[in-house]
Length: 151
Image 1 (cartoon, rainbow, N blue to C red):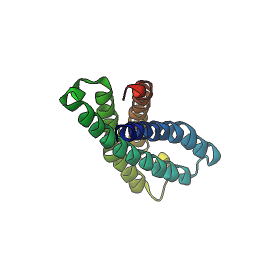
Image 2: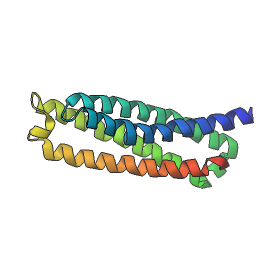
Image 3: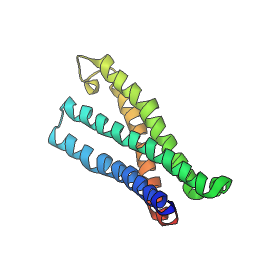
Image 4: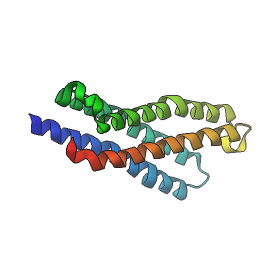
């Protein structure tokens, strides 16, 4: 059973961090390059990023439980445990905090595109914050991957 739990932990890390990198730094840029100025690119990007967020939530829950079960309260002294917590918090802030505001700004701007509206500056600033939080999550994910053999 331990080998299965270990393998599942590695798969959870792979799905989460691979999803972050694959969607955020490959798929989304390709969408915006292939569909410049098309609101469909933003809609699809948002949906893909939401899927990655939910993969992250599920992965984090498993990984936190995995470490707590394997190490008990000693898990709270593990760097990897706090990396997972930080990544989870960043994902939650992005998905439940910033993303709904961005969606609301887009809706308020209708029928215009948000980037051609009075909400442009606020949208751009919040999108920038979201992008920075995503980058930090990806960098923490790289550390998590490098420490994964110690899971």
